[in-house]
Structures are given as C-alpha cells and as structure tokens.
Length: 580
Image (cartoon, rainbow, N blue to C red; front, side, top):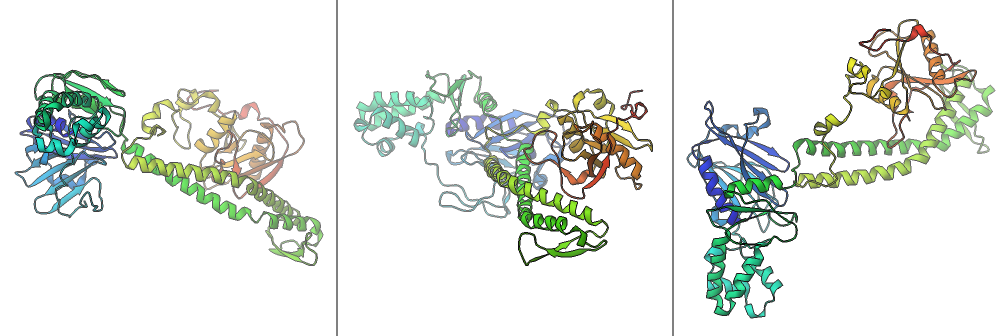
C-alpha cells in the first residue's frame, strides 16, 4: 500500500478506533488481525485491523466479531484492554503505528515486503513479533526482548513537498529522457505515481518541463493533491501483478486503467476503498492450509524414509532366492524343529549357506515361506527405484510449496483444505462401525458399503464389493486388530473378520469358513482348493500410487487352503438400521 493512500486511510481509521481498546490479535500465515472495540465488559462495535503479507501487501479495517480467546496470541493477553491513544504514519513510511495505554505500548505494522507486525513496550522493547529476522544492511533485527529501532528512511519522496532541487536530483535532465525513462524515474523516486496513475503524473511533468525544475515541482505537487484528495469519492484499482502494490486513487483526477487493473469504485471514502480492494485481492493462506502443507512435507519425508528402508531390505533378494532354492534342493536334509540349517549353495560350488528357520514349521513350510520372501523382495527390488524417484520429486515440490506458504504467498497448486472441502467428500464413519447413514448410502456411495455376514460362531465378516470398496473397507473401516483375508495371487474381494480389541480369538473352523468365503468372492471361485492368505489388518498397506483395490501384506502372512464356498443365506447380516 502506498504511503499516500495509507496516510489518508490512517486518518479515517484513527477516528474509527478512537475511544476503543485493544482486544486481542490473531496471527495467520498471511498476516495478522488486530481487534479493537469497547473495553472488556462493555458493548459496542468491534473492528479488525487486517494486515496481509502476500504481495501486494495491504491494510484495511473492517467490522468483525472478536475471536475466541484460544485463537488469540496468548503473549499479548496482558495488553488486552489498553485504550487506543491514536494512530500515526511515522516518517511518512509504509507502516502504521497504533499507540496504546497512554504510550506504554504500541502495535507496529510494517507494510513493505515481506511485511511484519510487532508489539513494542516502552520499557521491555519488542514484546512480540510475527516474523523474527536477523539484522541486515537494510533493516535492523527483530526478536522479542530487542529494542525497536525505526527502519531506514523511505526511499521514495512525497510529491506534495516536491522541490526544484529534489526534481533535479531524481529526474535529471528532462530533455534527455524519453517517455519510458521518465515513467520509470517517477515511479522509482516519488510516492503515489505507480500503476496507471503514472501516465497522469508523466503528462503533468512533461507539460511543465519547459519551465524548469520549479515548474515541474509545482506540477507534480498539484497532480498529487488531485490524485490523492482527502475528500470526495475514491476509485479502487486491483493490481494482478503481485510485485506491485494495489493502488487507490481519487476520482477527481481522470485516469485510464492500464493492463491488469480492475476498476472497482467509486467509493465514498479512502478506508471504504481500501477495504474493497482488500476483498478483491487473492485469497490468503489459512492456518489450516499452512498446517496441511507442513503435514504433507512430514508425510513425504516419512514415506521416503520407509522406502529407503525397504530398498535396503530388498537388496537381500538374491541371497533370499539362493536360500529358498537350497531349501527346495536339499529338503530331505532339513531337520524338523531346527532354528537353522547349513546347506550347500546351489549357485556357488563349495560354499554353504546358513539359513534361519522357524522351528514351529515343518521343512516344506519353511521352504514355501522362503520362496514367498524371495519373491516379495524381488518385486520390491524392481518396483522401488521408480517409486523412489516419484517420492523424491513429491518431497521437493512439497518443501517448495511450504516455503512459499510460510512466506505468506498462496501457491496456485495449493490443495483445498480438508475443512473447506469436507462437504465435497463422503463422510467418514466412526472407525470400527458403519452407522445407519453409511449403510443407507446417504453419505457413502453404495458401491463402497461392504457386504455383511456372520459366521456360525457369531463373528462379523465384511466383504468388499468393488476395487474402490476394497480400499474403503481395508483402509477406512477395518481396525488394526481385525483379520484380513485375500486369495493368494488372484483378483478378489478383501474380506475382513471383525475382531477388534477382543481378547478371544476365532477358532480354526471360523478361519477356514471365512477363507472359503474369500475364495468364493474371487476369480478362483470355480477352483478346487485355493490358497488364501490372512493376517492382521495392521500389517496391510496400500502401495503409494497403486490402483484401487491393490494391497500389500508387510509381515505375519499365513496361508489357509480352502475350498470356495458361498456364504449361506442365514449368514447374511442386516445393515445397521435395517431388518432381514
């Protein structure tokens, strides 16, 4: 916001906030909202001073209710109730100061990139700051406990106080400047001549150029008095170029809107125009969206770390294959109930392999387990490199997006916040239970609602209907301790035996019964005996980027050989809220 605009807005805001008290401040990723109104315990209008950080930086005052105490900055609680002494624009700069409590404290808003807000106490120095920063050649450092030094004098000058000496210093030889060079120097050195108004200022300067620097100074001051008249209607302009401040101008001076500018007035006052321009600016990043961006980075980092661990494990695939082949080749030599065995290496003459065994399993089951592990590691060895590249790219993008959001900028590819998009997605039932609304399909599509059965011994069993329904059942409805079934090596439904946190375990007969149902709801339903794998649901995950219905067992996989059997009619369980 230009100092000429801010000066007029501050004068109006001073009248609006006079007699009020500071009531709290809410810090947001894209700025702050400071609330002023009647002292605590009294009734009256509440006003919010809104500062936006993303370029174009902007300030406005709007009527707004006081937020809840838990949402306000707790470090500033001791200042709540301090009366407003007045507002000012120190040193004709792009910053606004609100003095509180008889000058004991003040709120300072720095409205230049990257923007900042801070509370300063007379004796303690900086009490709170929105953005800490280290000192630089251009700006002093800022952190709680530091003394607050006024920033350097603004680079651009007030055109209303233009002098012949200032004109000669900033514009140089007017006769040697073409229109573009004159426009650039005016916008660089003098306040209020940015955007489409620079054409009016350039015209005024060009007409007076023949009279020398004194004539140009008078012309520039006269132009500024008309363009930023304190009274009369105001025209608001919105810049789409994020590197230029949004501009307001009095309608007393005709102007022609330039590229990327939208005329949104006239408005009766400067503060009304500022509030209207603020509403036209791009949406600011919310606290929820900042939290979601940070969560995306953490998820990407955790996922990549897990992939790196899997990659290290997958490198043992050749060794696992040799061990499986050795067990198969020398199976008669494998003793029962042994925890390890040493066998000749089939691929290396004269070498032996030490192979760890499960003493609870017979030799042929140890061999089967070894082949399954080898196959799993080989699949991972071939799939992980491509997935790793994708995950690294996602992490780089997530970090870049977070960096932009933390700077107050709203990226164009920012996903919708779950809180704002919740009405567009199916409602999630409470984990572990399908509510009546879910089973009726009011919030959840019918294809996602699983079939429900009950075993002969009374255990609840849910069966997915479609690939999307399998995902919904396994990854949204099933609890970690439920048992998960699926036919080995063949497409089919995900089947969940509802166990939850119960201490008792289903019998072997129940497991065979559910395995038979899993075989029936698969492409192997017409086969004789089908291998069905089962494990706890907590050991089942969905590979990143995989198609709907695909799941992967991470550990503790067991196999039941079952003959496909359709669940009997009496096994069908009613959905909640329904009768059979």
